[in-house]
Image 1 (spheres, rainbow, N blue to C red):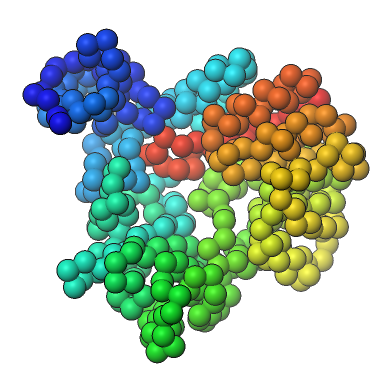
Image 2: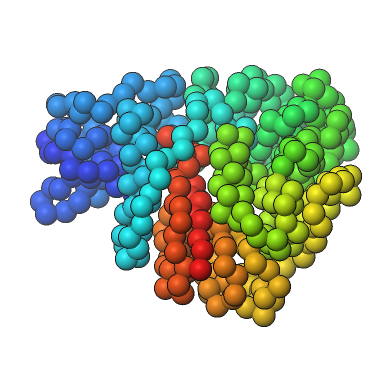
Amino acid sequence: MPTEPVQFLIERLGAQGDGIAMHDGQQVFVPFTLPGEIVRAEIDGDRARVVEIVTVAPDRAAPRCSQYGECGGCSLQHLSDAAYASFKRDHLAMHLSYAGIKAEIAPTIMAPPHSRRRAIFAAHRTQGRIVIGFHGRRSHRIVPIADCAVIRPALQKLLPGLQAIAAIAAPPRDALTLAATETLTGIDLAITGASPSLSADRRAALAQAADELSLARLSINGEVAMERTPPILRMGGIDVVPPPGGFLQATQESETAMVNLVCEALDGASKVVDLFSGAGTFTLPLAAHASVHAVEGEVAGLQALGRAIRKVRGIKPITTEKRDLFRQPLSQIDLSRFDGAVIDPPRAGAEAQTRELARSGIRQIAMVSCNAQTFARDLKIMVEAGFRIERLTPIDQFLWSPHVEIVAALRR
């Protein structure tokens, strides 16, 4: 149970962006506070809730949206722009230091507000009405979103229309997930969590509601239910229709920065392997100058890439391979035919595949990651194998969150 309010000094920010203070010899995590602030807070275990900020830090900024503090999407809107950029860079530096890596870190490439092109909304049927929005901070409660400062305006504008769709598709008790992506040809909406026994009448009603919203495509539990026009993303100047709910980089601005850094890291390579390729975010731009072998565990992404390259002329050859790189990484022998590689694994990293890369004869490698901890672990393998870090760049793709995207250029 929370205690009576206690006054203490916030000493630093933790890895998740919470302020950290000491009380009775123990660390206490205090959300929405900044180093140097003196606060009064109610302590509950190792966490605390601020009652009053007694001394305000000069780096404190006003929140950018009215849901801040309730919505679980953002935790760092109260930082000034300069302090926020430093936090992202320091977050990476901290994990590198834990791994014993000394490296110069480039300035953080920042994402602008209202730039996130994909949002995952939750909807729940409660007391005869539909509540739709984002999950609350450290809870399953759904917070309605009135003025999100992160997502693209088209996604914010879509929310009222999603009420009608959720009212048809939401099950009686469980939450419904609606992944909305802004593409060049309209919104691509992927619903998951709808009842597998959803009637034909309800499916038809959903398709009609999606058409009335002028959605490009609607999919339900992975199956296309309506397609007014193919949803198109452009990768390396090539049009790609992604699979329903498929992975893509969160913002176009950060994707462009990442692609540029990867292409620079592999400049001069003529035969490149793209590990965890997805639908071709790096494959297609790299194919302007090098043959590329795209390896991915999810067949839907490779199928989307295959459909895209069949329509294109004037690029180098692209081959694809479906392979679970966690269970069956490409060996150093498999990798012997390449002189460049890009690896962009999920948050868990790719330790086994990284060890094979380190043993291979490949000389130029671009490492991409969305998790500083597993990135530092895998980067250490490469450094110990004799690779030099030529450039290390944090990218703020996940605005006002503690997460950071990273691109490293390595040369043997």
